[in-house]
Image (cartoon, rainbow, N blue to C red):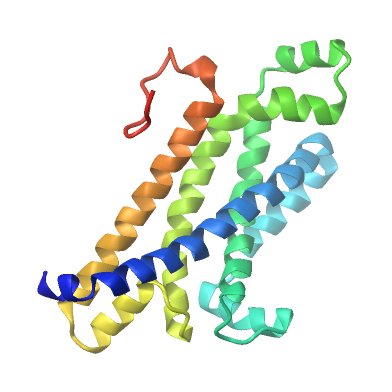
Length: 220
């Protein structure tokens, strides 16, 4: 505990960096996955290619991808943009199938009614399909968020500072305080991501509020 008190500023700084490196790819991945998932759902011939392709992306070892990014992007090895780009790829790999499943969960009669009202494909997506798919997409987003928080820690091996740096430093210096600080801070960060996603899904699905209790920490 004394080590944590003495290094609280460092822990908070690394937590903020970790939040950025895990959070920005989560948002970028969601934005990219929605049109990809919609295309795979609408044009069935694309579905096997999109799902298999994104699935293969997730099999690439994270350390290898972090090292390859500077070669692909022309950046420096320690540039945080490498981690953000790599984590965006992983997020897309996880979320495309989730978006497809979410759109598939929309009742056919609801989609048919929207079509009968004259809504175009894009308007149906934005005003009908995506809102109804929110619970499924949010579930996948929660998995991606926890995965991102975990995988980002690997970037400390190549020298990108975040909470994983505490784990590496704690191990190398036999410092239990740094190890526990990194582990607990990562767990708390993953929990906060999860609560934010649950809260966002609750706000975006008002028709479900009377059917299910609000997630913990979400105000009225």
